[in-house]
View: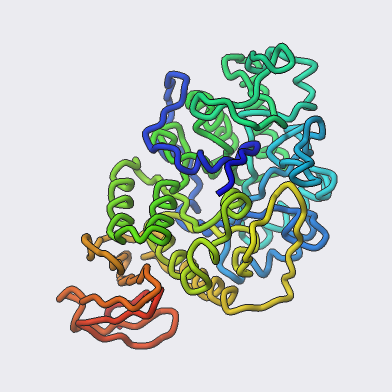
Length: 460
């Protein structure tokens, strides 16, 4: 795994401890879930890097594929940073575009993507389809050619770089994010301008929320103030790139399931007991307040760029399907990243454009479509009760999801060899139908193919 750190995106953040606290004391006035949008419980999210998502690499290229995304079951688009990218000290040795997390202007859309009007059209087209759109927000740092560098150097953390500035820190350690400059959140004027810029996109462009980059590196009381202000306009979806439960206490609706992602990789790569996954989930759900949810994934832009895509991490097509089913049938919100459904086999940098060929059809793409179509229609998977049925599992896990008269039994083999398990007595005589194949499954004993899985409807 590469040790390279890039602006706003670091693998070491992926393994950040769940109890890691922000450096500034809390000033909490908002309750978890205050002002949350009424659609938060139905989110199926798709992350897009605009330069890769279409051959043209523009907002219009995204518009052209919205119908396909909706048909797949997606209802929420997350765009990676849409702003002009800094050119000064850009890491062009990694890729010609530089990092999208090096923001040069918080109140402008990247002209290479189609500019302000192109973005406005995209938002309108998303809403016409009864879908939602959130944008990445990089509050922790700016590009070196952001106007604040010259006009307001006091907005930045003092340090040894150029006799005045510093690169961002992660957990107190200096990063090699040399293309960006750390902001000083002790400066109240900077905070006010940052919040004003966020409000600008909600008021002027009608976006539906934000995914907040390295959110745990920004003081919690800033997020509290920002979210309170945004919700004076209307409820917005707030996603924190952080695992800390306290992020929900200042108004975030979603946080990353980084601990689960680390565990599922360990189960696949190190043959750790499958029960570790269920223990981790059970503990996490106990820690989350109220209606809060985790974002669950088997890749995202960081993992696809700096580690490997799911077909590599999870042992091919079958393993990546099993991992995705397991990750997203557990309580939370599913995320698909930018072409993940095409079965990409190599790392893909977001410092350069790698346009995807959407003309290709594959079994994996069919899987994502069929699975997410079912997911988006299932109250049990989106919001149902969760009961672990195999607390000591080694190779195959089983749990149930139940809501509004819908009961599902989920069984997943995490190994590349057959696995056997027995149904609990209350299910042994039930009618069980696989929702993906419409095949009937009978117990009490089940044998799962390598990386096999069932999502079983109970009582049909």
